[in-house]
View 1 (tube, rainbow, N blue to C red):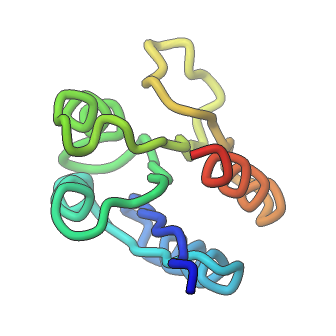
View 2: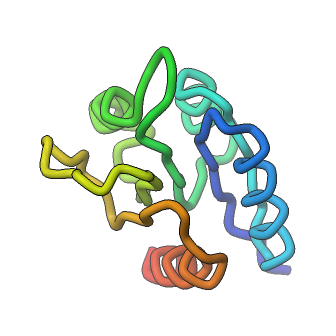
Length: 122
């Protein structure tokens, strides 16, 4: 039996994170949420590593840029692909390294296409 790819959704908008998790679970993924970057780092370091992280940039305490800095420094997490989710239309300010961006609001079809593409190539 094939294991479902694990996705980690990192967004401080709990309602959005849970909605995305529900949709991705329905699409055949094991979707886990973290409402802050510290919890996301813990989840990605311990237990089964996610196949992909969906990361909001604008969060309290630790933002997406800070999360990426810490993720990339850690040998346990640095190779996990990341999709940035943001409402910011201006990412010229040192955009964080990522596999791709999704500009909010995005459609479920856009999300699934990005997720499927990255998970399939991993």
